[in-house]
Image (cartoon, rainbow, N blue to C red; front, side):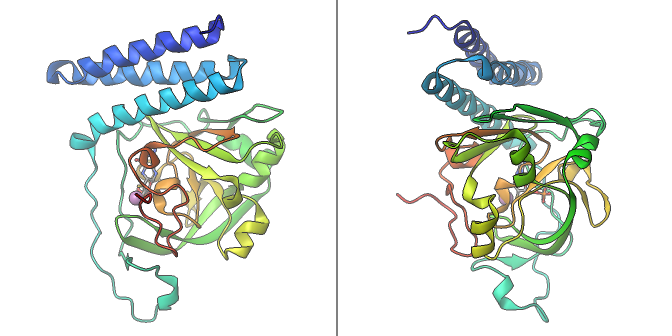
Length: 291
Ligand SMILES: Nc1nc2c(c(=O)[nH]1)N[C@H]1C(S)=C(S)[C@@H](COP(=O)(O)O)O[C@H]1N2
Ligand SMILES: [Mo]
């Protein structure tokens, strides 16, 4: 039990989410109820930083994430976007070692996500918040990212757990490790939870981000990217801002990225909650959690 006012306010938001999620089961109310649930989850997340006790904050963060997952499960059935382009492409001339086990190459670039694409997001006003176990909570608009971190172009391969892969994607953005350095992570930070519109999230161990482990694994940089093949990232592909995580399956590459929260433990995101693997290395075919 707690007197923490921020925790109490988050619990009130959690109750609002639960009421809205129940209403969302009624077709006539579904649209507005989902909106209410989304807003209440976002408001709850905004309050997390004000919860003084670490364990309590983590517990409430987990509860918010579970509600976000419930919300996404509700929208999944009717809003799962069709995935044109998921047919086999010729692999002739492609080094088979670059195609992980169980994957095939796709022509084009499928669009895959749960929930709605944000309506006409403004890149100048879209913000990314780096928070949690950091000394300096950092909020940056997309154009500001290029002012505070080195801008890099990185070519990497993309592997979706639904078995399509797309090689040689050139993303432009900033290195996540540079951004984290600005926020100055606490030594106990071991994981992050990346959140994206409308209520999506993915967890990542920080090993995926730091250079030494990444280089040892032979994988590309984790980027916060705003352009692909030299053009601004399509909204459908996560524009104005998405995560790119070459060493992991595609579900870790959060589109419409709004928050990176450093944690001292692994808090499962949307698909990790649903039995997908936490580490998610495509080369080792870590699709599903054991058991
Ligand atoms: N916000 C958000 N990001 C997301 C998802 C999602 O549902 N919501 N799906 C993930 C999955 S499973 C994949 S494979 C990639 C697909 O990216 P693409 O649509 O650009 O191909 O986005 C990832 N990022
Ligand atoms: Mo995916």
